[in-house]
Amino acid sequence: MRKVLNVGGNSKDIPIPAEYDGWTHVLLDIDPKGNPDVVCDARELLTLPAATYDSIYCSHNLEHYYRHDVLKVLAGFAHVLKPDGFAVIRVPDMGAVMQTVVEQGLDIDDFLYQSPAGPILVRDVIYGYGVEIESSGHDFYAHKTGFTQKSLVSVLESAGFSVVYTGLEVLEVKAIAFFKQPKDWAIELLGLPT
Image (cartoon, rainbow, N blue to C red; front, side):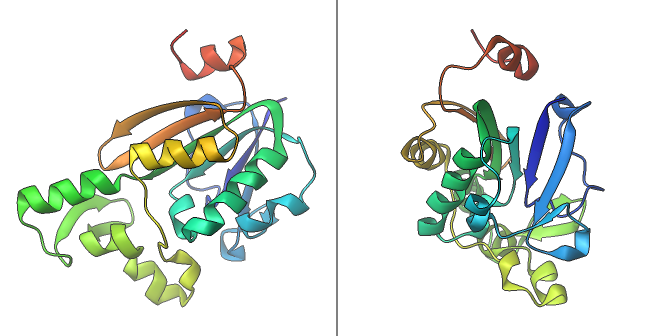
């Protein structure tokens, strides 16, 4: 059975993509309140067993680290992934956010979009969800860096991911990253171009 490590997923109550149906889902998070399987700072992934997971799923977590720490996190991804494994990463698209702010004449405290957690302001995308930071008292919920499609590809390539597929969604960049050409099972599973 294939295994996915959900890095920074907060809680198993938050669904992961259907591509992982039938996989063993291991949740890793720094905050124990969501009852993760592994309580760990993602900068410390090198302390976990090597080549254990077929995939990493990391949704809206990579921006919670300073830029210099992002490479530590990605080195940890490389450590825990099997050689033919892959990482799926979702981050806010700072280019699209800036463009929207300019085009709509928004202020930093203006409403940007509605999320399941509640209304998201421009500053929440830039600095982290203020409601969660305030209510939890934990600054690890703050955003410490940001990405565009180009900068995310660049940092993934710097970390050794030689094949990176990207796509843009509403105010979000999604990347699927491999160390080498993906195997047929991954291409089929993820609907990647051949």
